[in-house]
Image 1 (spheres, helix red, strand yellow):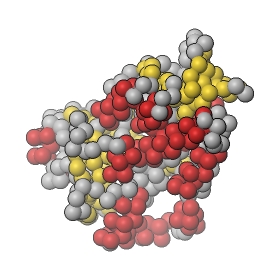
Image 2: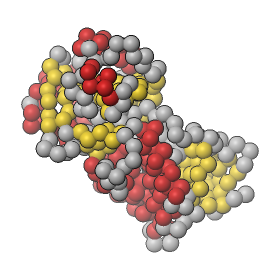
Image 3: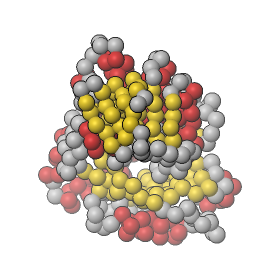
Length: 370
């Protein structure tokens, strides 16, 4: 049975970042990833400047698709409001390229990566954590759950709560060609966000390089995410934003938890959770890459200290709470839950209509741009 200092379950941005940091510090690290990379990952696909700084990536040196975003369009009803910055406020990427780049970087730093391998069971013991990876058991002093909302580490050790608030999404990303996309939209390279009529989610239309990304995410089941997507597609067809003759990549869905209801336990005696596995997606926006990367860096720091006997993993829980709160959604969410829905919609429309509030509350606040 092989033994590792750290086993990381999940090779997305959170898992690869934790592996990169730990392997770079000389630790024996194994990454277990259920898919073969490069793989398609459903995501609107933009990263903040803070996220790129945490990853130590210079946008000018990144070797794949990257679209500087200096303007975002926010739509509600039939209105479309523009917000601009004097310099890039965020960057659009293609997750298939981005995630593959990060995982290979972790491998180059010294992490061993096993792709196409599923974790069947996770068992915590006094001397470490045992993982069944399909006929083979491995051991780790520490395990990092980075496998998204349904991460097997989170299921086995993280105390997943039935009270979690879940976001459902449907998304498609299609390679169309920059020329055709430029002719289809007056806002090429700039995200267009469309608030749902009940403000329980939003749809988006985002062109970046040769790719077009369309999707919708929402909290709640009525109207369903499928109905919301249908309304968005009708709007996009009416506006001419879907080039003639383009066959879209089939829409697929996924779910994730936001840190509003009862939060997951992000760390225990021999495990930590990062990103979506820890339920860290930003409330309202659902932005998850930044929290995945930031939490992975924090986790790696605490694991290194723990391996050296300098820290307890409870410090990781405290640091996450300082940044993301302890769950429950904070004052704004509790206030919203107590207000009539008509008043909430009126307030949301006012925020979208007001240039300063739209920038500060929606784009810079919920989405982390700027």
